Amino acid sequence: MSDVDISQDGHARPRDTHALGEVILRTEGLTKHYGGVHALEEADFEIRRGEHVAIMGDNGAGKSTFVRQITGVEQRTRGKIWFDGAYVDFEGPLHARHAGIETVFQTLALADHLDVPDNLFLGREKTKWNWLGPFRILDYRAMREDTLKALQKTGVKIPNVRNTIQNMSGGQRQCVAIARTATFHSKLTIMDEPTAALGVQETAQVENIIRTLKDQGEPLILISHNMRQVMDLVDRIVVFRRGRIVANLRKEETDGQDVVAYITGAKTQPAYADAAA
Image 1 (tube, rainbow, N blue to C red):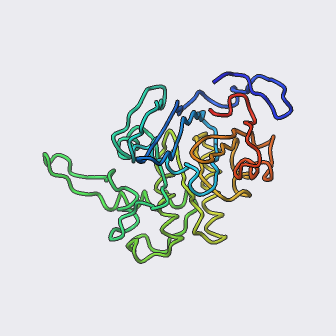
Image 2 (cartoon, rainbow, N blue to C red):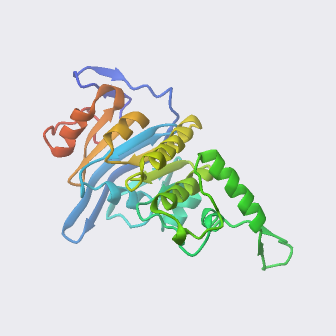
């Protein structure tokens, strides 16, 4: 990808890379086929440190497939992925998380029979009395205290953190999943339709979490159908259509009508010369 952008009026200009850090994630030719179904084709993409990028597209456009490839949920058919300056080939989502990618999937990936602290620290449990050799005792008190701090930091309100997830509303479950992602400082956060099933108040909480991540300089990929949300929260919009990236738009240089035109195929030409990236 070049350091020159072609604006929608056709004029070349240097890309402003000083306000953002170096590239944290880059894909080249990322492709996924399910037999004869080509769900993702030659996706070239990048996001820089501190940047918030929205991925938009109609159902079946390849958005979630793209996320599953970069987080190791599925193994790509072909293509290359670089993360934090190194070539990566994640064996699974846990491998990606250990590398620094925190993801909120539409399925949430919560343990229904566990309470909030156990879910926030699932796979990262705090222990005490570590001198017992291979045996460890969970430090429930420390995890509960850290959970309360995390919920306060993110603005998520859970009346009783000792309630199991299965006894919570859909909105509360979603907020727990997002709070878990925001609690641990990651190198990259990915949110796949984080507010699709939420009410107005809970949606506002999630959007505040996203703004907090922006203030902290943490990069984020947001998959959303909510145009108002996207225009309020991100720096750049990448549009997928039929498994391909068809547009790469700076927020300040586009509007909802323009984005919809790319989503529906009414516009087919990339907005930038390097829009496939």
